[in-house]
Amino acid sequence: MRFLLPILAATSLLAQTAHPAPKVQEGPLRAHLAFLADDLLEGRGTGQRGAELTVRYLETQLQSLGLRPGNGASYRQPVSLLGLKALPGRSTLSFLGGGACATPTFGSEIVFGSGVAQAEQTFDAPVVFAGFGIDAPEWRWDDYKGLDLRGKVLLMLVNEPAPTAEEPGLFDGANLSAYGRWTKKFEMAAQHGALGVLLVHTPASATYGWTVVRPSWEAERFSLAQGPRGTGLQGWVTEEVAKALAKQGGQDLDALRAQAQRRDFRPLALDLRLQGTLRSEVRTVAQFNVAGVVPGTDPVLKEELVVYSAHWDHLGKGPGLAVDTHAPAVPGHEADTIYNGAIDNASGCAALLAMAQAARHAPAKRSQMFLFVCAEEQGLLGSRAYAEAPLWPLAKTAADLNLDSLNFVAPTRDIGLPFRERSTLGEVAEAVARASNLTVAPTHPDTGGGYFRSDHYSFVQAGVPALSVGGGRDFLGADPAALKAKASAYGKRYHQVTDEYDPAWDLRGMVQQAQFTFDLGQAVANAPTRPTFKTVK
Image 1 (cartoon, rainbow, N blue to C red):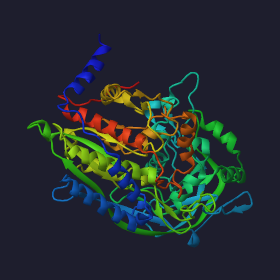
Image 2: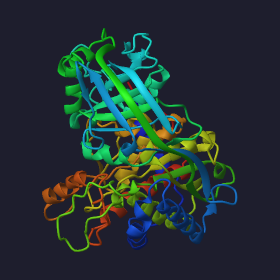
Image 3: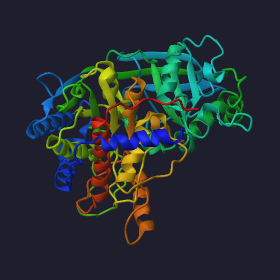
Image 4: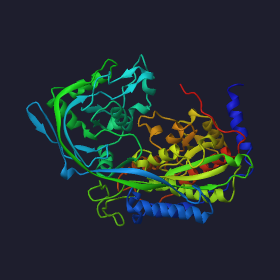
């Protein structure tokens, strides 16, 4: 009976919904998607002209739909960001040691930038191999060992130590834990006083290629203006460069990697110094989250909130930024330098606008907020800023449902609910799936750390149950294998200029995903009780 209680409770939540949720319409969704992914918005880059155009469009749409401004009289929530852009043409970083001087080429072999608001920095620092750069007391793991690393540049592995037969659950087993995220490594190195960090890239450890790393670091990078100070130097090197540097410093990279898998690993100084000057453009820029609210109908529950979120930013545009994979001479797909971000994440924003239109005509007992956050591509900055200064008390926020990179292929028999086991929100989602005649897509090991890479995580960290609702993979159509291959092929367009809107797309799957998310939000918004976190072992 104990096993059945969560299922019965979730089913009762659906029964509390006063009316069936209205339908999300494809017409508005497609129109929003086409506009948000258009060249006119220049890739919606943080701090760029396209960002302001995007924010203006979103707030205008919310106003036209009749949603209440989410921030007093304004639909905007200001987010102050620190912008840092490396100037590789005016910077030189060389590695001296072993009687040689190596100067990797920016872009193809190394990418770097500053983590502090300083236009010019000069380096003459020893290089230390720091393993995975992890200090995790709960796992009895410390790659720093209390050593003084001030003034040193750390060469560091991406990801985390592999599970062993004795410890199959080490660092969450096959799933990447927060300690494996490269952003966490930068933060931890700064806490330990390091001068700089260079991460060793491999496609397997990063779970994406160098063509994904490079564009982000060739462009301007951002952090919260009031956030913690980073290291003076941050960046990545290719595996080939890392091997050469290790050899130049008297070591073998493969041997170092093997040592880093052990708890008794200690940082190892290489016979290598980094020398040079890093010059950067530094500025502070105001960006905006955009929020509109559909007030609740219940005199008591209307004080509580369900949030639907999606990030509006992508990588923008700029000379030398693009890795163009367009097929040559394809009409309408000429070479360009605009990262349109049609799937990532014009699709999520378009879905939220279409859902807001539906919600306006069928308010729920709890209030509902449609939240478009900025600077996700810069490290979830907009959602982090919201969590630190929420427009609605977090103590009265029932859940966040996030949409990022929706299904553009075809309708499916299933729906993706990754990490649903972490709160009772997952049980409600499963009940909504059954009511929608959808199965829940099988879960796979989260080797890429997806749980920590989307805006729902900012809400989780702030104590609000949250899900990023994924698309299904069991496609409906005459040739499901071809449809699955089409979906998989998007990986080559991820964070490339070829992530562009195609009018021929079958958006029934996108509408299906948006409808499910809205139905789930309505179930939560009309339920007598709120979702709660569960203990996950």
